Each structure stands twice: as structure tokens, then as C-alpha cells.
Image (cartoon, rainbow, N blue to C red; front, side):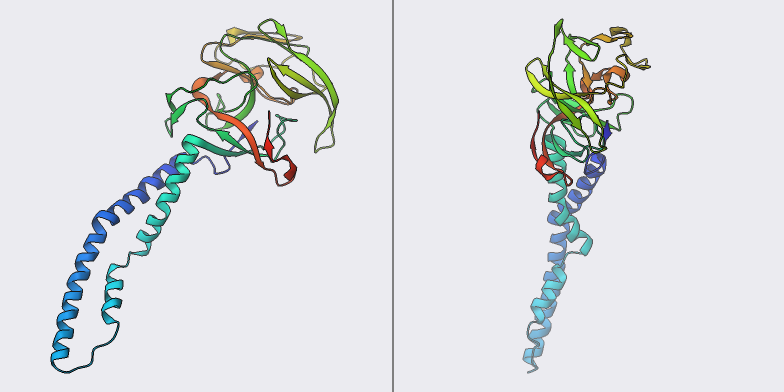
Length: 302
């Protein structure tokens, strides 16, 4: 499932705007404002000299003329004023979006029943490490993704797209998916049948509670879909996987992750396009902050 950030994919645009408005703010604070002050002082000196001459001649002075002149001379150009006002806002948004949290909208049902179409979610950008914005280079490792995490990452086949899936395999894991049931490192996961799930298209799916090595969550299965993986790509490190008519088995390479959607038979994921490299990680999804069609969905999820 691909989706774009609510704010759009514009980290570079934000960065350019921050630098541009920051330079204008800096120049105005330390250069242009002083130049305006100097010109204002010169104009006020001329004004005072003229008024002194008028006073000596017995003429009446215009009240407020000096304050009005000073205000006019010190006034920022409109474009400078707006740039200075926007700079701290843009800088704050850039910092929050790059290092702390980013908002995304779910556009499809590949993570049902955990995430619905239209869910607005927040993603923790620092829990898996601090990365330089724009370059996406990790400079500080904090935590590694764990099985069961719901992770946002850049789609390996097109890194301009963001995907969201559940981590089912971490480096070194042996993942086996046969007859629509998972095994991790030789241990079959436990499944508990739940009431059928009715989605927004009024279609029913089989629902199960899956225990992914300690993380309990719900998955969906479609009895009409085959158990085998249909036409997987020739993705990097494809030799780590084998496919047959009952499913597949993969050993997760170093610095790679195996991702699957909770809507198991309606999710294009690592089964088809391969592993997710560590450098593609965006962050960990952890809360639904709004769904305008289903307001009751606001809150955390697993």
C-alpha cells in the first residue's frame, strides 16, 4: 500500500523555504534594520533641523509628524515582514517533520483490520534512529525494528513512495508462510478465529487473531485467493527465498526486513517485491489522530 505524507512529499521544498526565509530574517535582523535605522536617524535629524528653523521663525509645527516619519522609515518591506514571520513556523515544521513526527493518510485497505482507509496516523521518526533530512542518512542508532511493529518505509522499487506494513521478519529470521499461516524461526504462530470482518465495500473476510512472537493483532484472509504467491518479482537477494504451490520461505538478509500487510490476501508486500533495506526506513506508526469518516477510531493501535 503506497501513500503520501499529509503535508506532501516536500522535505526539500520545506528545507529551501526555511533557508530562504532564514537568510532574509538574518539579513533584516543584522543588516537591513540597521540600514533603515541609519536612514531614519538622518531623516529625523533633517526633520528636527527644519522644525527648529520653523520654530525660530514662529511657525506652527505639525503634531505627530516626527513619529509618523520614523515609523515610515523603519517599516519593513512587506516581503521581508512576511518572510520573518514565516521563518520560525517553517523551521518548526521542518524540525518536527524531519526528526520527531510525521503525519500520513492511509489510502487503501492492505492493513485492514488494523488500519482503515482514511485513517490519519502519526509516525515516530526517531525511534529507529536519527536520520539527516533530505539525505536520509542515519547518524544515530536508537532502536531496531521489532517483529510486530507497524513501519513506514520507502518502497524499494520506487523510493519516492511511502509504504506501510507490519514487520514479520528481522535480519537473520527464517520466515515460512504456508497455507496462509506464518512460522518464524521454526515456530508456528498461534491463530484464534474471530468473527468475520465486514469492510466498507460490504465484503466479508475471515478474521483471525495472530500472535506474532508476543504481539497480538488481527489479520484477514480471503478464502477465494490462492495460497501460493503469484508471480513474485526478481528482487535483490531473491536467492534467500523459495516459492512453491503452498507458499514461500525466506531467510531475511542482514540489514533487511520482511514486511507483510495484515490484510494478507490483499497486500502487495515483501512476498512479491522483496526485502526492505534499513536505509529505507521512515519510522514507526503508533497512533490514529483522526478519521473523518470514523471519528471513534482515534487512538493508538497494535
